[in-house]
Image (tube, rainbow, N blue to C red; front, side, top):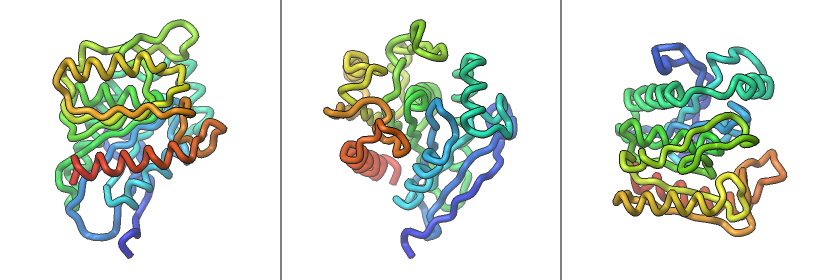
Length: 246
């Protein structure tokens, strides 16, 4: 069947050649095809993110989601791992980028892939996906409501996160941004700052700000979930990757 997939937990060499856990999903039909690195949100490497990874495989892409908390909280349940990482101040940006780069190389090395790799992230993962696309060569990036790209987190904003507006000039690929008009992090003003920076630096981009949606509108296990908006967002992502990864 065309929608048949294989999905499993694997171990790969992450940044610094450290072994990390990752969730991998791929179509069973022959390639070549594009690939996607899925960057999980701050609550961690959870079942909802694994379902997103499987969804990309159903759509025809190979996909991998690294457990960014593999080193700091090995073997801990998702909620405990996330709490431990938050208490420690989060994961260093350079470590996250190195893990994303390692995942991209893992995907490029697979026999059924065409060498094109995109990255998508949700919440903190949206920020990390954009940062990775500014620091390594990728073919497409999707930012789903990632805050603190243009601004630095203040007190009360959770783990420390540094903005990096000066790096937008280095963005290596087209960007799709999906945001909610009612989201306080990032607020619409910060999204507009990102849009202006992309335009100023001559980058290819497509920004959507959805009315009646706030943060985490893709999160099916949350009261923040907005089915209509999530469906529209998925259509945008699949179309975007269909243009840049196929």
